[in-house]
Image (cartoon, rainbow, N blue to C red; front, top):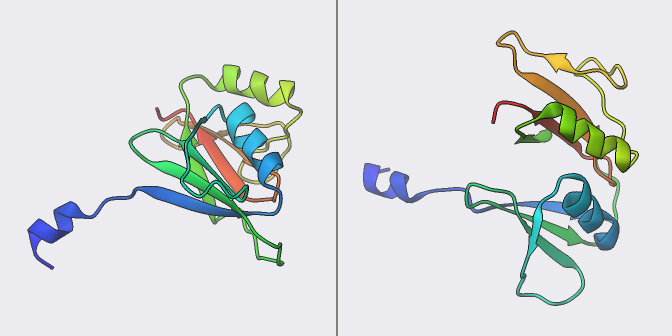
Length: 132
């Protein structure tokens, strides 16, 4: 692949399969504070969010089929202030844990970055860290 073509490749969005669009849209808007943006389908099965850095999160409702969910396969978002973020989680009664799975604990990476892990309404793992 030439350097010219490779330089043109970039991420534009991440699509996440959900069982209940409204429940998941509420989570990503209210808990993670993502700004909901216009989506072209207008079919009640899609919601799009601006997640920063010119990247979007597209959540798509479809008839739910069992999937394998593992903490190693996760989305990661960075925040400015872990304490403020955790207060918002508590307000919305969203549990979090450290990497080993201890509830309410913050993981500290060897480089000093704080991490927590939580699950969205369909059980997908999300890492939040302060490497902003």
